[in-house]
Image (cartoon, rainbow over all chains, first blue to last red; front, side, top):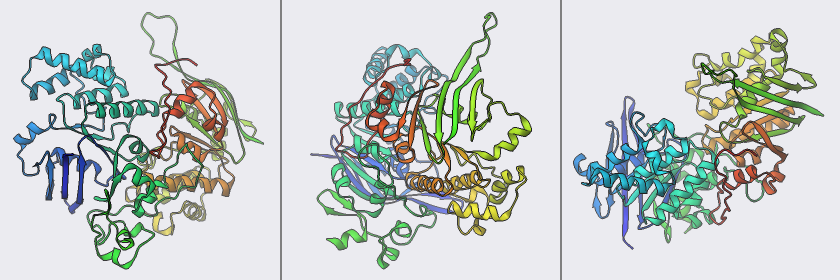
Length: 321
Length: 275
């Protein structure tokens, strides 16, 4: 199988008035053809920053300081804005988080999607319109609603329209950034279902960003866990649930209530995430970890393949093997 | 003993009148609901946004006036209480709000924030503020008293909000989605804290949430609300294992499960149905 997205040692920081904030550090992973990867972590851990790095839609004060992002074998980090324009939408596309704000309120929703298609493909407006109509059917909205404005849509419909827009130019890779966070349980469930079906049907690769590990468990083949800008564990969904190795992954799983199974007491992770202006020198999790040893304070753990397809950045894991 | 007894509580909001229409129309936000909570128990009120959960909360603490119905708290009907009597009674009922970033006044120190309800009731005592901070796990209290909300994290802020609610020893607390704005690793801590405090002070709590997994963890009983009505109410495990109402079934089948091996059967309902 050809790998379609490969990230190597990615490092990114934001310049702020108080100094550089190290938002991503030592992030490496591969998503293979047809796979869906889920990225979980708390707010501020760098999930969205990673998505924006791959789209190269970073704000002015952010810069990629190190590393490579290979998309279909080509490194996109050194690409110019003009070259990126050709890759965005057609190659890599993104479903944005805030469905309320991602649509322009003064244009008809259908026209906004047609505009996006015509900016990338040289096709007639009529054909573009037909395509949008097909996309609407795909995401489950009546094509007649193309003539409506965003305020006439419900929250769930807006999110569906955003998904249709992200799919408009037949992308090979789609980044879904918390696409259901602002929605109600039942609507959330419908949208997740839809995304999963579409991803398999169009055989795209997907990166699904969420803070909710139960949503990820249901949608993705692989899971990456992020903490304070580091990717700390990356494995197949089943392997990660059966055999979580990083203390943070274990803690995260036991802090989630479920409606299935026995009711067990939740174990919160003590403390707070570190300030990334001045991250801990060694492992970034050590101040909150219950297995800390001397080495964790001073040495950063390498991100290594500890079992087949199971990657881990933890000193404890290495000494086990 | 029933600490809380709600009978036929109703709240209608008038709609904007059309120039030519004769009849005033109303939105039935809360439509004839009744329930009871025993002393020391937690009742979960679950439902989707717009179903009337928060309106119910505001009616129970009398931040809104009910259109009709009775609200018995500790045997006394507070639905019709006015000004001075209401103010006196307020020390018995407290509310914890959803967003700790908005429910704390940014210009007040933690000390002033927690002192406010005490001063309003004429009970100010620094010792009480110390105790309240200690109880919610903000220790040492001296380290927090003169700080401002912006210096605290989300979890710490919500703990301050809980301390503010508990400092005047209420008998009934309404918690409106108290953890939905918090991160997972912090959320578990706040949920556990609320369970501990319930044990310690024998509190009666109405816990409002849209998250059934959280409701299962927190509540003794669950009431499911839909379009302003309570459609089902029962013991928590009973509702989770054996839901009776179609809406409850649909709601339960939509909850994602943190276990990749479990495959859910989904029940779909379309549109705004009346049940």
